[in-house]
Figure: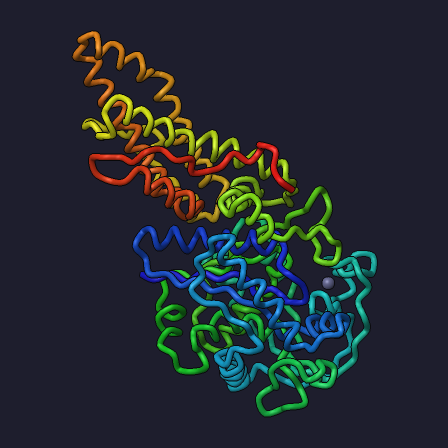
Length: 497
Ligand SMILES: [Zn+2]
């Protein structure tokens, strides 16, 4: 039973910001968790190189488009190390030879289904979104995402017969064949489909695109619309267009095909993309998980606004685990979340340094002090510990990262309570005084603490890969444990800026 996880592929008109890190980390947790349960996993990310806004940004910077795109794409790929990401593949849609071949094949399949026609079109276009907006969806005449005035564009384009798929889309969304999570997003998509779907334009004149993009098969004066091109990456990266068996293995045969995306592009993923796949006769995604946005110090996170927060810089300074933990633990399931440095530091210190790290530290210290590093028999996992793995499976199955981190924290709290309630140092004193029942109780307490810490080290790995590895090294396995070394630094000490 294989699993396939993807992020959206961001535009590369600027460097990555903290919102990109959120999505990458969420998908990474899903991928690592599935692997930890023994499932074969493919985790894909990449960059959307073929957008007109990339061209515009490169020109504004006075840089060659390809060099500009490749430079920013490298910065996205470069988040792997600081954020400890485990993606298996990274697709750059302009330079990866697998991509154009797959886009062409997908296009030809939809053409063969009779789903394209040419039409002259005039509409209001937001270059930031790379989409036409009906007037009713504008907010006071402005793009609802960018708060900028769209431009009037009149041109002849290829159109896709989206309207034809209305009933099928309703069926797959209502039945949950394509799960859209959280529920509020599913309802939003259903309302959009029920209101009636209009065919949408899926190409642009090559001249307007500055020659950038993938030519429409059989019509080189047009390039494939950037969203069609971008959505296709989920199958082109598997070699859909090049006959690679990876496509069968990870798309056709996977038990789950999960897209992690931001709320601004739900319609593309939950309506347009399934419609294209239906048209081409390919399997649909099984789930689309939608996250909200981050704000920084109360302001909308925007590349142009200068508050983007460089995730690599943040990880360099505070550690990838601290950044991951904040993103997973504090970002709300629905509603935007405000990032501040104080919150990141407070969360890491409370949960990681003083919580998980301290529990392991005191456990190992006690085992060395009273049992010479030898793990006694008699571990008894109960309460939150006994159900931790199942609780993480369930919460991540619902894409509820906060609830999953709650489960970890409740086990840490349980471990710390065990120490405070049983007072091992008093048991040790009684043991020295010849109390045999104290020996047995101390054995059980220490063994239970070691088992709890080992469980936490294993179950926290998808969330905190590096810290969890440090914990596992100290905790070892079998009957001996290593010496305690702080696994999570305390961040609130005065820090060099
Ligand atoms: Zn826009």
